Image 1 (tube, one colour):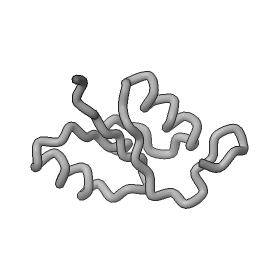
Image 2 (cartoon, rainbow, N blue to C red):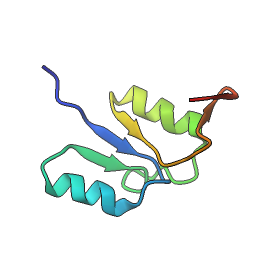
Image 3 (cartoon, rainbow, N blue to C red):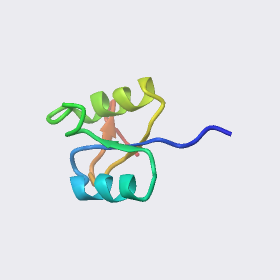
Length: 68
């Protein structure tokens, strides 16, 4: 079974990613990979291309005008 890998977009505090990493959970943040300022769609595209589960704290996370 594949291990889940998490991608935290810029709306999630970097401390959350660091806490997950300290607990041996595979996690990266938008800040770590230079993705600050990307649109919601670009954030999701990055996650999909890299087989990552996206985590956001963005209340209005949209893709193509559709709210999740």
